[in-house]
Length: 252
Image 1: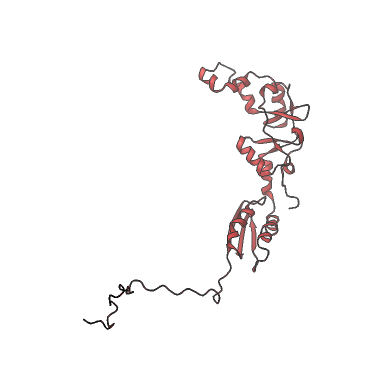
Image 2: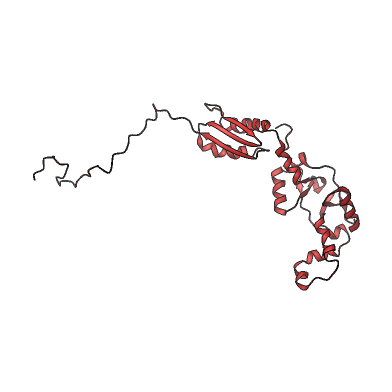
């Protein structure tokens, strides 16, 4: 799949604005405004990620600025109250930071974002060294992939691998990222597999599978005879009873 993103490093932003542990509250706000970002990693030694500061970490200072919270709020929002009194990145940051390796798949990055309810992730290399940042919008660029490019990969990597000796060609059509598979396959037990593998191809929005099994061969697979008409059939009588159909020769 030439030119198509496979891993996080293919779609991440490589220019990252980071903070030191001692960055002040006002410096953090200014930097966020200047770079139009809502979160920034905090690094140690200039490169190693140790935490992340987001707008959510800064808001408690404004929320609790004009009054003391009641006892219930103090117990329920203790961590936010601590941040309301924080003045440096080290005091404000969420640590350890939720990060993703540069070599991770896009699916793994998406799952990490969903699990931790975050909009972006610092991307790290060896020893947690910061190498970039990836956002939700970065992950969605995979769906900009050309339909014909998707169709070609499905034909090459899925259909040709599962059905190398198909008697009839299997048709693969893609429109707006939706893959449609039609034709006949020699083994219908593989239909769920081909559907799952096609859906896993990057850029695929959905899969419509209309694959059928091989046509019947009447000479080798004749139709079975119709079952007897049970409603008018005469059940056999018990052995030795002499019962049978009328006219069987039984004496009156």
